[in-house]
Length: 203
Image (cartoon, rainbow, N blue to C red; front, side):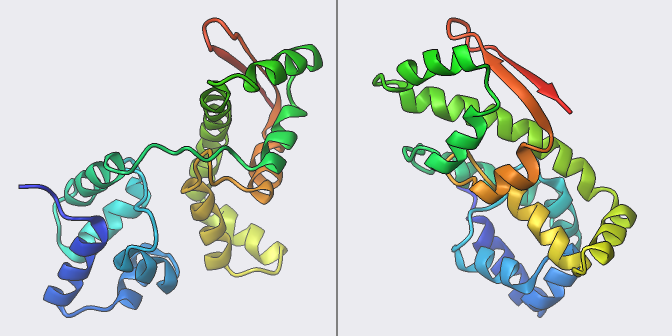
């Protein structure tokens, strides 16, 4: 039997337990809109490894801890491969962090037929590094609350901003994401065009 979609499973359990999206949102510490969009299928389910979301959701919905990640894995794997290239503004910001000589060589490589795949590879790896930092930041609730107060924002607003970034992919990352989370963590990057191995220098 094929797993149902994440949103369908969440909707069914909310109905069976006679609970609301708002109550689930409060338990998971996300906005109500986040849950509503997930249930309606308007939001791509988080990656299967996102236990920061799936663990509290499973507890609230009285599901096995693997139920939601399994549904997410199947649902995401069934999606067509991303074909849209990263935002040109994003690529420009990331390109500025590359060694100038290599950047010129890369520009020629990216103009070739397999250029989109190479671009996705580079942006994806830089994104993974930045998301690792953000994931650890999410674990520091006290620090986030202090930062939110300092910036005049609510804790939930700040948490949602970080969660939205963790949901980003190479073809959905925005210029604001780059400026807020990538460029302040990554000083320099380089790539071996033969092996595709990357060297990323952090602040």
